[in-house]
Length: 198
Image 1 (tube, one colour):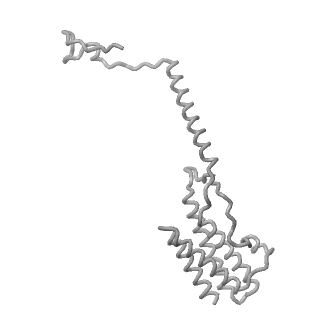
Image 2 (cartoon, helix red, strand yellow):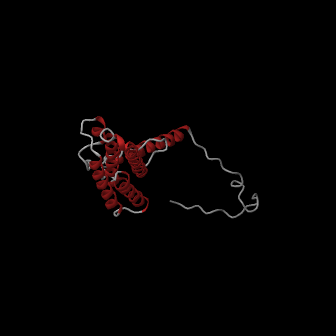
Image 3 (cartoon, helix red, strand yellow):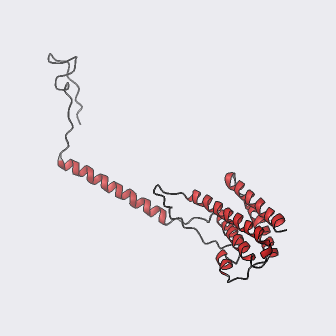
């Protein structure tokens, strides 16, 4: 490889710049070069998309610890709604418990979704998790559909006390907003069991 040194200024120079360099050079791109450039860019974009797609499909995440709390909250709300049939005189208190526990479940779900994230078009990424069954054998849908015997007020109080303890225990392991959310849920369950349903 040879290195070409600039020649000393000649008589036909403008301000010490050789006359052949005084005019700007235009980069020329022939058709073949343009096709190579476009093809290389397309292949690069496709390769990045394929690598990104492969990386996300195989990941299996641990279940979010708030997911079990969401299941408990929905089960408590369904149990409170079902208990109205056995204790119609406590309709107002049971309706309040059902509404508050549904709000708790929605807040927990919103926090879980926030951690998973949302794409720019509003869709959520596929977020596969390991199986983690609900803490209680009766699911909210089973209680609501009537396939399980609706709990009485005392059974609901015991259920809310378990939910209160579970949320308080989990709050100790979390930090920031999550700890505050769980502590608030725990306090609300204690008030529901100890005041509303007393």
